[in-house]
Image 1 (cartoon, rainbow, N blue to C red):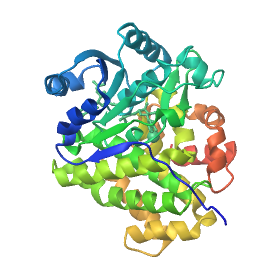
Image 2: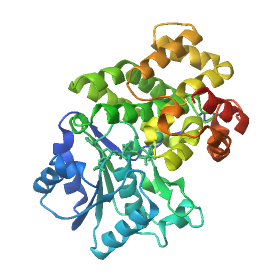
Image 3: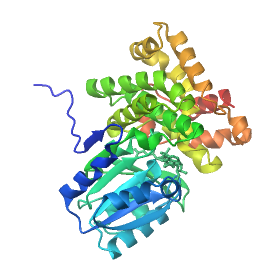
Image 4: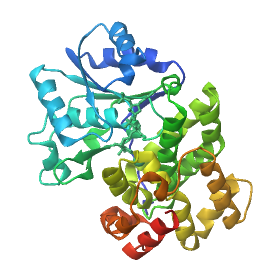
Length: 372
Ligand code: NDP
Ligand code: MN
């Protein structure tokens, strides 16, 4: 018997508008003594979501609202200390990928010794299960609510690195698209491009299998048809479809990302380009680069846009992305042209091995020059 693939998703996903109400049932199932609520610095308080959660839950809650975008190891270390000091036995990560990843890492490392950077640098490995962790996304992009990874910035060496372990899957993910309604247009576009990058990279990944391909292709379709509308009109249906796409692509992230994400990290670290934007910049160029290695998959992607012609399909995606209103050229984003060889060098990571076509620094240089 040949096993073509196996897949375990230990996270119970609760999806739909207004499902934040179900948070209480999830917490009641865990019966914690004290909750550690991890958020970003301001939006959740301003939008009244932190206070809504506090009033909904009849539990003692310690709020840790210090997570910055692209969270650093030192912020996470602070959270771990505070979580331990307060004897919290449940972590809730509420926010975008930054708050969810910080919460996820705090939950696992609270029960494992050492500093966050030691796990990022693979000097230490996770040995024990963490504190139970619940993810509540408020953006539609990272998929962190449905995967076993967290992306944290190593502040000493200035690199975005990943901690990944099956113990890091959230026990519950509450995906309530209502929570994404407050995202301004730019954040909607940027996070949507992150989800599109996850869906494309996992669809064409060397590690893809028929389950991943089905999930990722559906996510690509949802994003193509809903992201422009979600940016323009505050209608829940577009938000629902984007949250669904983001969570689906998040499930596929079990096999990791590859080319756009590799190229994105130095762009974020060096120029502060938001994560999804940095990934989205190279989508069209990498689609074009990969096309001859994966003609069948590229045909399926083109079909989503209403054509069987691969070239036309790529152009349709180009138009969709260009109409989101984000600057899409490196020259508009403060990148120095002389930095391109260095950026290409810094883009080389092991995850590039999962790209369907071998890719070298000189190919990445060309991609970056084409979008300059
Ligand atoms: P962030 O979580 O960084 O949030 C970006 C900004 O959006 C913050 O200023 C935040 O404000 C604000 N914000 C969040 N939700 C809302 C809302 N509903 N309305 C208005 N403003 C809001 O953005 P992303 O979600 O894009 O996450 C990016 C991070 O996720 C990166 O670090 C990236 O590397 C990581 N990532 C993780 C993956 C994984 O598999 N674990 C996959 C892909 C990306 P405030 O801070 O005040 O709350
Ligand atoms: Mn991403």
